[in-house]
Image (cartoon, rainbow, N blue to C red; front, side, top):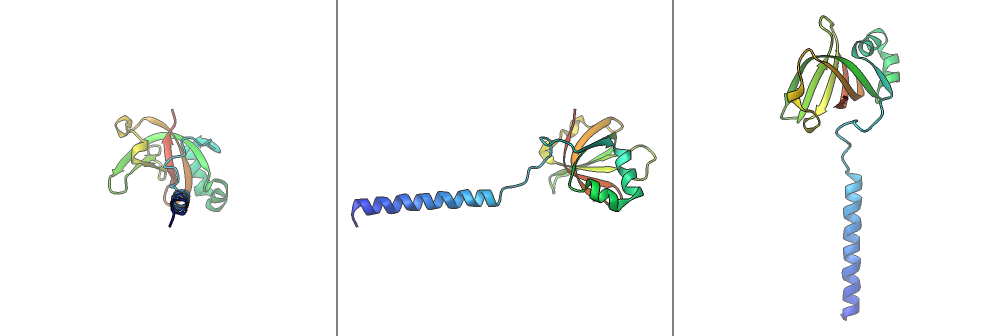
Amino acid sequence: MNHKKRNIIIIVTVVVIIVIIVLFEWAFRKAPDSVASQKAVFEMEAKSLVNSFVQDEQASDKKYLGKVILVAGTLESFTVNGKDKKVSVIIKDQGDMAGVICEFGMGSIDTLSLKVGNKLKVKGECNGFLMDVVLNKCSIVE
């Protein structure tokens, strides 16, 4: 095989490998860990969001499910789950039966700054209502 054919085969092979790598990267791209850069569709007190789901879960699912929501309320508690690399923050007023569970990626929140009883504003994607309203991909809003 002469030099010209060998160089063409090498160039074509390199181009094919690059195309395959780019396609794999695009196909298996990870979704963002937080909605920090997205605009909230709804802004409300955590208690109002919970009450909406308690009063009419089906209508609230249609309205809020999959939407980015900014909620404000009181930090009741938080837990760090190292195994799942997540931090769960519960926003709820004292005495309320239900609240809003906000799920954060481990690197997207400073747990040292969290103080139970403080007011918080959290933005996240609504994932529905179990015993509490659940927001995923959360970020703290200053």
